Length: 223
Image 1: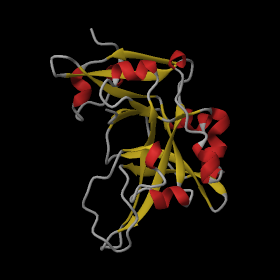
Image 2 (image 1 turned 60 degrees about the vertical axis):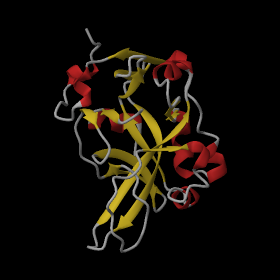
Image 3 (image 1 turned 45 degrees about the vertical axis):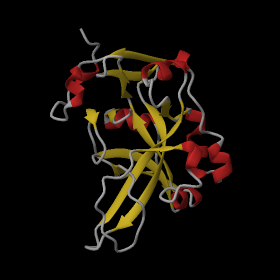
Image 4 (image 1 turned 180 degrees about the horizontal axis):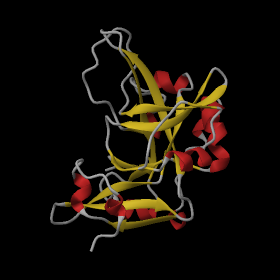
């Protein structure tokens, strides 16, 4: 299960994913959950922009009641056919979420779930593929939201996520521009499983289960 992210500080994110217009403001966080804000880079009127967005995809009704939390993840296999995500996918509403790492919970034979922290080798920040939506509520509030795109797990991730066996679609630096601007068929080709050899993981404290904790100690190896 993938329900928590580690967000880098703003300067590192901007160095990793440059944007023509930077509207976002944020600081490093170590326990970001769905329904909270995350930084994203997307295209707007032909230029890239960096904004803050709610993590948890809310479909784009107009003048509708928005009551649900929204999906934090979407399986890449059903992007075109999903009732909620199909419109965003076909309209090119793709974005990139810069992260320092993420948490994965492993289900033990005894039934409890043990959290692991996952990051990349020699990359302090990396971009995860996502899709976004804009919804207008009955009160004329605009909610912009996103969901991470999931692909088949590599060997390392399958050992940890031994139930779902999925992982976020991690983009290479060379594919950032293509993910944001390419036609849907070409963009789909960029959704690949990241190699196990380029990833690291270790168990962390169950403190990460509680949102009241948000500090660097959360990503330290459990003792």
